[in-house]
Length: 427
RNA sequence: GUGAGCGUAGCUCAGCUGGUGGUAGCACCGGGUUGUGGCCUCGGCGGUCGUGGGUUCAAGUCCCAUCGCUCACCCCA
Image (cartoon, rainbow, N blue to C red; front, side):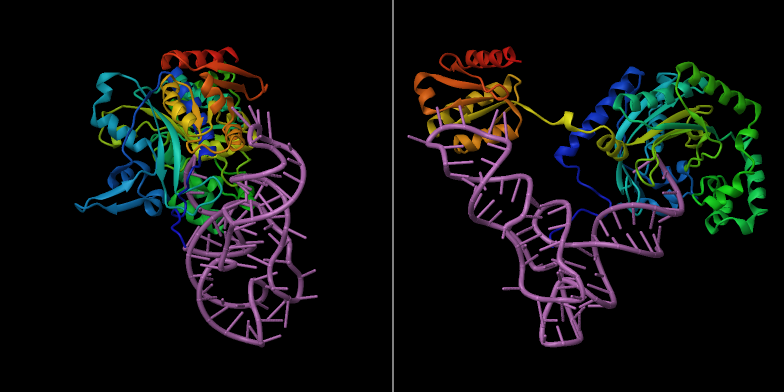
């Protein structure tokens, strides 16, 4: 048996890469329109960084991280998410002092040791954004609107849900009320919920058991327990979203998995990916910068989008035919003398910026025409003995089948220019 | 970590209650067209039936184990 990739680690083959590039290019373009700058951060960090940011008691930290001792004995971890690393860099380089409000985005792989399933891998890829230093509700709406625009420009139909998780002033009291509610119904909820009510109480609300959901219809809602400040912030965020015409649903049962979230949270949801509903999600994390040792009172908000999930959606919702790679010119040379003449010419054409494919071993013309067709070449330059003796080649338009002679004598640069002109003239 | 389903050619699959793996489709290579692609047609290449054991005269088929994949739970983008 030959060696296979690790479980949950996948090769992205050339055909699929076209979709990935489209997704990434679309998002990057929008990030830039919104004033975001790219930051590249390491994939490996000290384990402590994630333990402190994501939360010691979360599943991610407890049992899903790729952690190991490096050769010095330090515990290091392959990042399970991007926010912690970006904030570490923000703090480490004193970016707050350079610009009061930082808008950053990053793209790359994340690692979580989970059981793979549809839309979920051990190495997966996220595009994520962070805005640090501002907590105006209009910013919350702007960030959500940016995520929404990416969906629009990718042509993906998803739904947007928002919620507020409160802040350290109001959430604890709500948590207590919820725990009291669940423990009063111990016998009526599933084992998972009984466990969650202790480990991560808010999580009971998105239990998949319809029986549990029935029970929670009467449950206290976080939105009824927000302090004045948080309630205000949420109302203004909603008003700003309304102003932009972004359609959303308020879901008081929406909970995020990471401990650091506060106030506004949101998810972009689809029902087309099996159990994986969220293609993007994020929220505010106002205490996190300080918690990681950064400047006090540095609020933050961000979101991450799962690229595997976006690509899956794009492939099934949108069709991907339009993204096929194509070639400007295929050079078919027949016989050693022609191949000799073609080889440097091809290089010059490529230097000039044309996409040129060829067959280096001088196969039959039929075979080379097939290759040209497969490469989706718009033109084929046929260079055989006949043409060569006349100092010419034949340029064939693959779609119309029209052929015209092209003079090859003279300065190579001039010949290239002639060819390039012939090609662009036929567009 | 838990549960279920599935492993036959590069890909998609057929193979019934065990009885010689398929002219199967797609892809690939070549011929029909001495130098012209897509369509058609003819031919060719291609297999430790995931692996190991067991039952049997006989196992792709039944049993056990193991590895892998998929989906779901958990959790999450």
